[in-house]
Length: 126
Image (cartoon, rainbow, N blue to C red; front, side, top):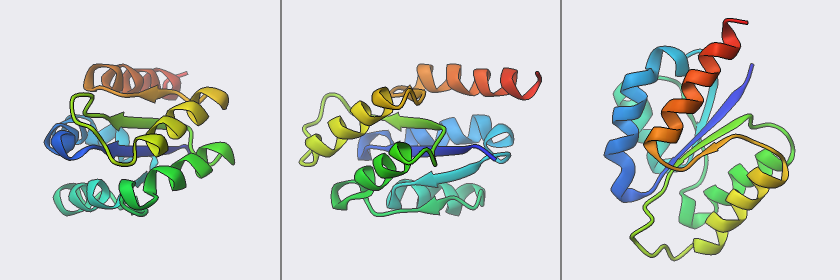
């Protein structure tokens, strides 16, 4: 089964919950992992059995990056807040880079995330 990583900066948590609500039927068919707060919020609201890792600033982004590098993550949806400085920006940059290095689809905003979910549905129906 494919694994999807879900990450959202603090100012994007509500947007992530709206995204998951819109796509919960599709997302429920995949193994889901997330950084701590994002995963906890999704689990509390939708009961999708998201496996939570560390909080992003405490190493969660790096944990997801390691899973990408070891081919244990197939798609990353990372709703980033580009207007707020993040203290763990080097970790974020490393995660984006490792997705590129390993050719892992990555959405960094809601519209691109919707496109990736549509692609997942197309792949399921092949």
